[in-house]
Length: 279
Ligand code: SIN
Image 1 (cartoon, rainbow, N blue to C red):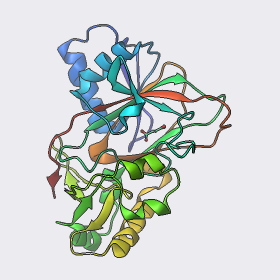
Image 2 (spheres, rainbow, N blue to C red):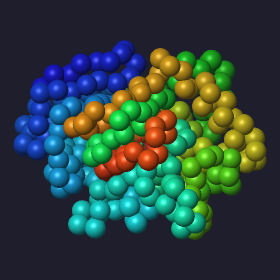
Image 3 (cartoon, protein in one colour):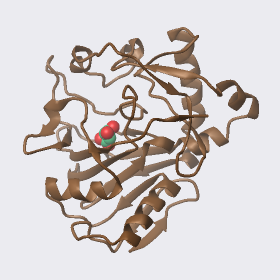
């Protein structure tokens, strides 16, 4: 197995491994360490059934249930489809993940990793981008880092700011859940002790002690600061690619820059995380 870094800050490619075959303990450790260090990994040349894909992602931890159960594969429900043919109850095409976000922040233990596997790709475009929020935090001026210390986001299934974002489906409104979950705005990575910005713009209703409007203004500023080219890995899909990233140090988004008449289908698995550690 070879690990080839795309840049110092984010992204590495893994070649020379078939994740359908059993991996020994050393390979297992090397893969997990490469993921934490590089934030996003692309594992090339895989060929999975849904069950084999689920087993491959399980090398990184325990798969967990996902929102929007209508997209779960009936025979393998921990694997979901991310498809550009999905429509919501109002008949509108769903644009899964069109804005920068991190997954399921309204869970007490949100997923530590998210993985995608390409099943059908448009002839061009349809990239997935991942941004290193650890690098983004490190690049903030010290006084801003100080100001963010101890802040907590209030996370719901879909916050009131959702109306400002494209790609939010009517189904998301229908599934809105009432119990808010607090998450640290700056979280500490359990494996390396490094701090990262951590928020989901749509699931954050507000920051404790701030109005929803002021919260969105702050999150927008933090996002603008974060989405610098040098912090981003933009994955251009190839057949056989499995992509996985570390949600404890990343946000991600889907690019809808392709012909919508072409079919794009990915499988997605989430890996169970721990309680986020506040900075
Ligand atoms: C997602 O946000 O999980 C979807 C990303 C993608 O479709 O590229």
